[in-house]
Image 1 (cartoon, rainbow, N blue to C red):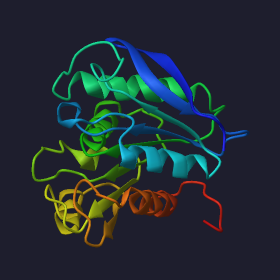
Image 2: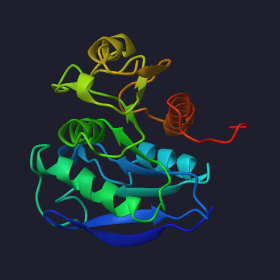
Image 3: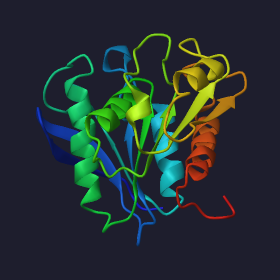
Length: 217
């Protein structure tokens, strides 16, 4: 496993603080977006960390970043509007390292909402697929996910306070490709003590939506 490199990438509100792990001859790349900034969400969140590390172990180049106003990133919280542009900036930056290999988005809670909105607002996004973790369907409007062309997967705790796996399936019932929803039995929205289990589920789901993963995984 390669070392984590801290760097800054250009964003629409200034620099975005990020952590990068580069794979030799990467099979794919992933941008991992963190939970809500006003509730302590950062790129060092345990679920974000474990998911990013698990994807890197597949031979992927991975990038996690702090949204505007979080950590050392420039700017200020923008109620999920400007944060969609932050996802766009991170995706564009990582795409430049991948030499045409597929790029995936992974978002946790607030990060999943911003990633979904990015896919809706940029129909020619070139994203190979997306996995949402803890999609808060009870609290937020998902927009028009049926317009998204990329395949979508979801990892949802069976006891998630912001939406059950069944509610997620209903909310994503009209997507162009049937969304893959995997429940983590007994897990709540924060996955306390179960970040590694959430990461394992993400690897499984991302493979189900067509991502290149080793057969033994």
